[in-house]
Amino acid sequence: IGTMILESGGNAVDAAVAVGFSLATTLPRAGNIGGGGFLVASFANGLSITLDHREKAPQNAHRNMFLNDSGNVIPGMSLYSRASSGVPGTVDGLIRALEDHGSGNISLREAINPAIYLAERGFKISYYEANILNVYKSFFAKNKAASKIFIKNNGKPWKKGDKLIQKDLAKTLKRIARYGRDGFYSGNVAEMIVKEMQRGNGLITLQDLESYSSKYRSPVFGTYKEYEIVSMGPPSSGGALLINMLNMLENYPMHNLSWNSSEYIHLLTEVQRRAYADRAEHLGDTDFWNAPIDILLSKSYAKNRIKDFSSEKASISTQIFAGEPYSYESSETTHYSVVDKYGNSVSVTTTINLDYGSGIVVDGAGFFLNN
Image 1 (cartoon, one colour):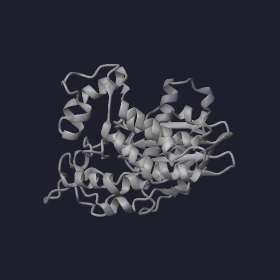
Image 2 (cartoon, rainbow, N blue to C red):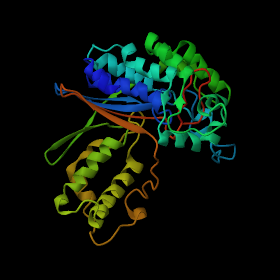
Image 3 (tube, helix red, strand yellow):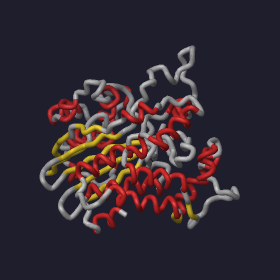
Image 4 (cartoon, one colour):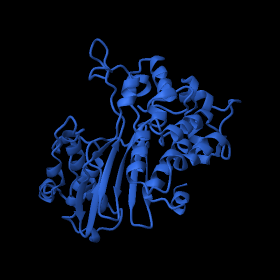
């Protein structure tokens, strides 16, 4: 679909938007209109932009919302309840990118039509996707709206070549194609989201939806040898950490290390330990947190950070700066990149957090809510 848009005269942004909406249909566990993402673009004219369209906490959210009266965490509430969902940002972000940086040759309807077709007519699922749907059958069974779409009528397992049809999602996408962001953040779809919230302990209101707006953020820039790096700044931690780690690696003769040798893995592990310790301590949403980005991006800081590296011995995570970095990396979230013939490049990370988000589908609208 992305290639088709490029061949129809679209640029990299047009294609990225079409791919984003199509993933909402073909990859319901991660591609989404019920979650959010980050977009990074570098254009042939030298401009670089980053667009934050991650989910936003509802106005009624508060720091103790997942704790009981005794101050203890309520198991599962932050992941598998309606209260776990932030205000979705994907639709606003993709539309804003198209309006501000698209070629002008591709309309919103043209960008969304392929996704509508796939949702309404269905598409054949792969062996891998069939397996995932089968593994999550008991998870879908906990939500009536999810069961109707993602568990087969006859209760039999999904298999390669089966068609996944999503009629409610097609209707939602049609509203977005016709009314733009208003087709999602107000009107029927918005009312369905709020009704879904009211079926449990959800917090998202019509006002939360209407007031949502994606934000352009300042990109982070760095260099690695002769390459320039342009990436996403906070609230994403990825860009700053990527540059920080490459700054550390620049101090070592990587060309002398064999790919995936023990020496190579050891060096990368030590670099990542230090970067992730800094991430846990220093990074956050700059709307609310003063992150020391300039320091994390500096080459002198990186050089000082890695000076205690030993090629003979692994360090202990708990003894590095801010403590033990994350020991678990999940398999959720997806990423895609588009480069066009004009020299424009776009990369998008999109997610609803865990696979299939909270497991709760907005009844009548056909998409999973994020968690």
